[in-house]
Length: 437
Image (cartoon, rainbow, N blue to C red; front, side, top):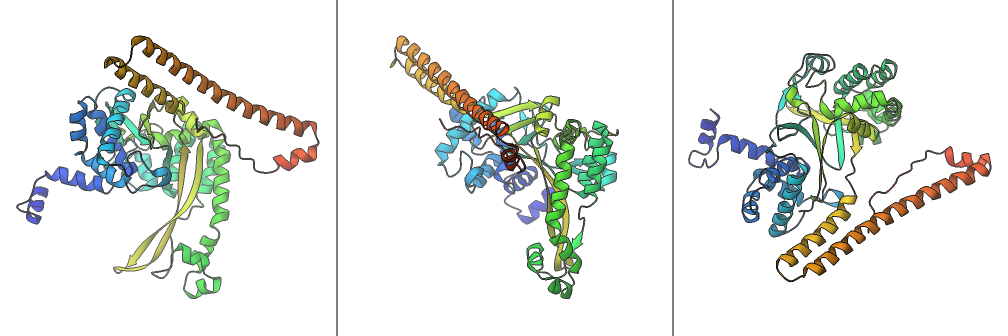
């Protein structure tokens, strides 16, 4: 029937199958980051092709084409290696990325269609959220492995009250820590679920600037109170989650569910699965430079590392609503975003530089423009370069540690007032792991 319907729209111009047309439509609606799942699959699947053939095939792939168009509009930290490059440069970048995929991902094929449709959730999840289906945690199948795809700054979950409540209850079941998780449920119950403004043009930004008198006059008194109390409410929720996540059992359990869909799809906490294919068992982490990938099983140690980096942000979201087909105002609800900074191996950049030097020298050796003796000398110099740079990195880090140690010693051996002047503040210590060499 779908084919007939498409035929009626364009009876003489059906050049693609209905499935291809639907897939193409979905792909073209995606952002560069979302389309990158398809780029990984395409580069992985075609990595065995000769270079010339690969470049011909890859530029026709619908996911790759959608990604390249979207990436050209990216700016700042969200810019990809292909952003605003020529077609030839893009082909070279994709070819090199296919080699990364071949080296870093398991042998086999990848399927980027895994996360394109909503699938059945577990009975517990359905009961709490009132949704029978949701988006799979497994974005892509890599060599038969259900894989979540994340960028350098990964959002583990984003859920309104019911979704967050289900995640907290799952964490309670897995961790066995009832007291801390009951405290989280108390905070989640404070989430705004559906507060509406009156007036087609009165959104949250306008309501925040509106006086109390004007809010009363327009029928938005209650919505105004909620908007004005948001910062205080958000601070309280954030603090409670921070305290709970300080307990490794709670943090790990929350991270496990957010990362994998342990209960949401597989039903492993309360029993009775939905569609287990929605559970992510592995994760692939990409970088905007498209010169590295990290593929890891979502094991206990990886979950614990991720849990320690989780940051919670309770946001107020809004959608416009209509009455009798006419826009009448905005409805608000609270959603919890859990993100984590995923930092790839920074030695990769240094290692890549050395490998490129060796590869270039190997080419010269094979072409007869470099003697074997000189080739060995270049290899020796490349190794010394790498070793010395790594030593420089360590010395830099050691000096920073020593400076912090000396500062603390001075505070302790000085007087208590000086120490309190520092430590009564919220101290945020960050180490910049991106070192320009």
